[in-house]
Image (tube, rainbow, N blue to C red; front, side):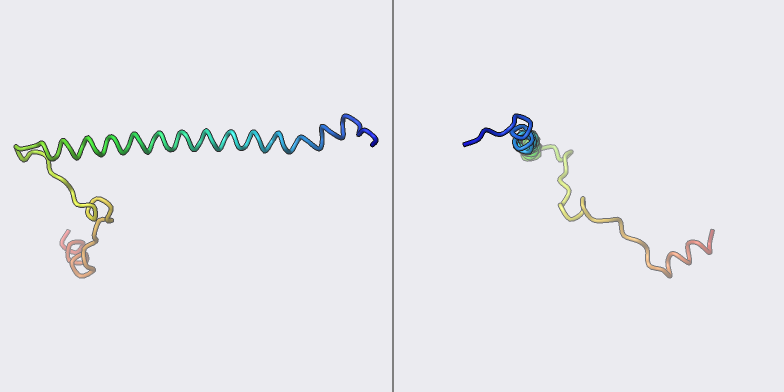
Amino acid sequence: MPSLPRSHCVQRLRPLGRLNTKTTELKTFRAVALSRLAAQHDETTALRAELQASQDGRVRMLSAHWSWRAPRRAPAALHERIVNES
């Protein structure tokens, strides 16, 4: 079996090296993402425990739909009346 020139072997293996680099980058990204999710989970758990332990009523829990909903706009007729009065 004839041996291939060294440059041909290097060119043939270069994409494999890029693939290994990309795989390493993706594994690092995944590890960082999982670490951040775990930290967020711990913080959420701590905040919920603090909410349940609060007896003085100074801590209130917002409902999920309120915190993610866009602000409501006034009806068009009310908006026109407010604009015309000013």
